[in-house]
Length: 41
Length: 236
Image 1 (tube, rainbow over the protein chains, first blue to last red):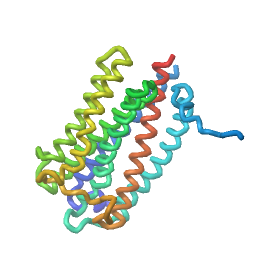
Image 2 (image 1 turned 90 degrees about the horizontal axis):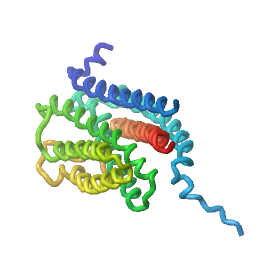
Image 3 (image 1 turned 90 degrees about the vertical axis):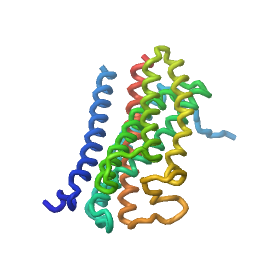
Image 4 (image 1 turned 120 degrees about the horizontal axis):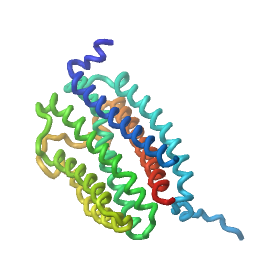
């Protein structure tokens, strides 16, 4: 498990890429759903 | 004889498109989730460690699909902008506006993951080479499109101005795609093309394709949800 998260010493680069990507996608979805709710009221 | 012709223009009206867009968006959101889970599984647990890059190469499963989507979404956006310009259909212009933020997002992701891949493999976060610079210009084209749309109050004029900008910017897409052939660049050439077998392990390729479908379905779901917001905001 620890080995998996270490990514052969490239943890910063691999997880830095994935974390930012999915954080941004999540932010877009949250903002969009908020906007959608506001249009329905 | 009765002809059952498909009513192509039936859904060109925002009001009739609204419920259809909702159905497609929900379906694509579910598909995006399925492709994402399977793509991440293949990418992290099935695909082997790369012989030269070690585990760092696993960035490919978001970098390449995001870069493809950044270019593809721009072309789709420019297509709808052009359709709006030529046919004067409101929904076409709305589709262009709905696609822009997601296209910009994928462009940023491609640049960001590229930097995080470049640091361990090239030794630098950024270089001003042809591929990277033209992709950065793509990001500015998306920003320019959104800023121009936002700065003009008259909706029709804003859509026309945005369409012209989007269409002029299309010239950048082949420049990005062929930049690795036209110029001497640090960025590697295409590993995947339509004319030959991919130059990578089949499981690596599968992971990349699954993630591409995930981002594709995500883009459709998000863009159609956004176009529904635009319809709801502007048509009442």
